[in-house]
Length: 242
Length: 223
Image 1 (cartoon, rainbow over the protein chains, first blue to last red):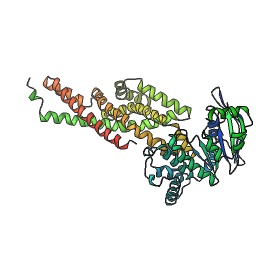
Image 2: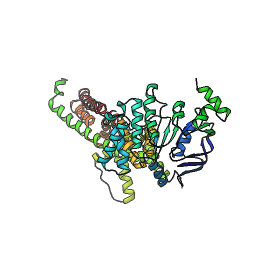
Image 3: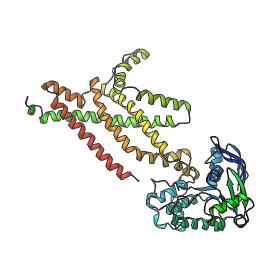
Image 4: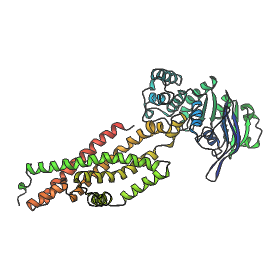
């Protein structure tokens, strides 16, 4: 479980998040939706210490987290996996080396066991033949699937996705969403920043709509898309749905 | 004067030996310079303000003064300083003195090259390592430095080529390197043209070969 209380984050004089209260419960899939600049990516990044909040408190389970403290950070990163918009695979390493680096160096796993796990995960994301490939040899969709497999190597309890399909060519979006859907079906706790409304509607237990650094509406997917509580939500949906 | 008198195998051999001296001095200085550069680059990137200031002063001091002055400092100035402090006389070896001066000089330039490559690595690489649970040291060692090193091959090679050419300044303190040897030949024959052209040929031979090897190496390591 991740809980944020009264979270505020500024970039210079721009307020990205203001007094946000947010909870991600175990087993839940939450989609963060909103116009660009609404603070949805910032929220996702602040929750795991990629941005440091100016104010507010963040809890993982019952533990209060100070991201400037190495022990707290280590605790968080042992629990979560993070998937970036631009993948951030390590370009000088093969897919295999990308996947084995953290398990071997952080968890000190046995190399044979780790390799076995890597092969299983690659099979699950449909990249069995790419074990020895370099990231530059993969398509965007393949890169993102490899990146997801890489974070799953650390056996996270929670997966955070920051616009995982926004940098992809349209025909590669589905292959990545399929992998994510598969994770949902296996009960992974997930926080997803996305513009894929149909996907959000299908997989989310809860949709959180942000604008201007505030949470405008939290709702279940059915009501969010069909009967939103807030006029601003309706306005947003009208604009994006053709 | 007949140029055949100067263009002898013997003179080519003399200059070849001098070219080897230039090359070895440049090579040792480049390696030591790279080591100094790594240390100073980490000083400059450090969170520690004291180390940062030391790194900045070092780089500005070296880049802001001529290399010839630095060579003369280690040859003529440093022994005086040494005597003032310890009271005993320091006899400097011109080779060591030359290598020290050139390493110290190269260190400042290497530090800037290394620092700029490290900060140019995409921030996302650092973040990806962090969310995988790697420590700052591990991220540096396994993710950032290997990528920076690959990108450093080309600038390091140009630095090495610069050092080969700059080693000609060491003639001033009596090192008989390639250019100095050419001047000595010029004095012998009362003709500087041919020895200077011969020396140029050796310089070009060295620099072009090194560029060629570096190109091959870089292509092999590029990802």
